Image (tube, rainbow over all chains, first blue to last red; front, side, top):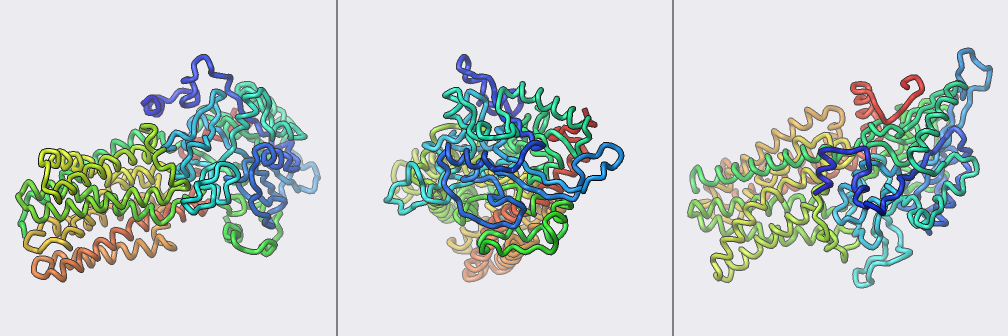
Length: 302
Length: 332
């Protein structure tokens, strides 16, 4: 019930986080600064290795250096590559450069303050950790798939390949894993006091891990610096706690609009409309009850 | 977004290295308003069981109400038929849902919590109550025993029925998919009307015309209401709603309208006189309502597949209300 209360009167804190009481830890997250990303994909590799994520096909996409294309059940860090005929620096007069730039961005689950996946999960498999992050409990998930279209970023997906751990019982004749997987912000590493594998592996500090408040300050300073230097299109994405999902736990510094990187320009947690949707549904159900009864009670029998 | 940015979303299934571009990747990247035309959202991973369940759940829910109302007017024949139809649909529904799960053996995990923020969780509880009640009532009716328990079970299933028939509208509306979420005002009403139509149509097939008047009225009224609500939704959705006229959703939408209209006309004109017409009309309406659920289901996939629906509707919102998702230097 307190989940509905949080829908009606959302606080700035992640939903369900305060339930930890004394065991609540400082909220942590990622600040991914794409202005220093070099597209090495060490984060993708480190993530796969640490989390034992299966290989998911090798496809030559022709889309710059990107061959994983999107986040999904088997890709929890995804580096996007965009080549552009746009100058990197625009400070008044043209600097006479070639006007070419190569954008790279390491995408990840946003660990939303108000997370739609967590709200709609019917089993309670998706939960809020003591660190304020969002994690799928693999021993609970029954693969209903509701979180998949609920996520405004398209982060979650069902794993269709054979289960590497905890396979389904043979009697069902199914081999595929059938559960939903996503970034855990390395919950196991956090528990042990370590930083997530991707941040650890990042050679340029494009992926920064830390307490969210501190990361926000660091991002503000970085944006101010880039502004001074005249970087073209620099903007923070998901930094503001007033956005449609209450701020991201993993936010970004981008050099072009979010949609260019395959990110939604104004994501909202759709469950915020749920109180209104339930009321509307009750009205429809009541009307249906009365309508069906009226059509039956009044009028000819034959 | 220019046309040549889109074909790449169809890459799946193509042999590696066969992607061709009309122009250099740099030129494409410079104008790009989406990431190589790839979807921003994930398409649902649901399979055929889900839209079929939307139909059977609707039949079950509306049949429960029809059965009780018919009983109140002393129309025992119609009441009993609707009870059995509803119980059967209520029996098939959970099987469809379990079959769709990635881990069917874990279906009972749905019932380890009660969660008001999850339409699927509350829906599972409603289905459990409705299915339990209607099948108890039908079983006792068959056996002719324990009348007080049967009455109680009928009362419970009558109250749970409308919830079962309409919550599925909230279920799809509570997602990030534009055509579903933006249709949240109409979807529970459309599903409710469609449920009423299919329950009436199913009962008209199994009850002699002399007792099936209420069922035929229900079928015709349901088809009319559902058609009007669908038009209203498409009108309000504007461009986001265009998926209802494209691809598979378009075909199902067209089939839904044609079948339901033909069936309702047949029921209204000849359903009272001819049993054959009643059976045929009822079957046509049921087929139409099943197609309607498929149209809504497929529309969601198409809406998720093309990033323009997400980008364009959210950009419009940003222009109207301003946005907090991005922080630019000049805005600080």
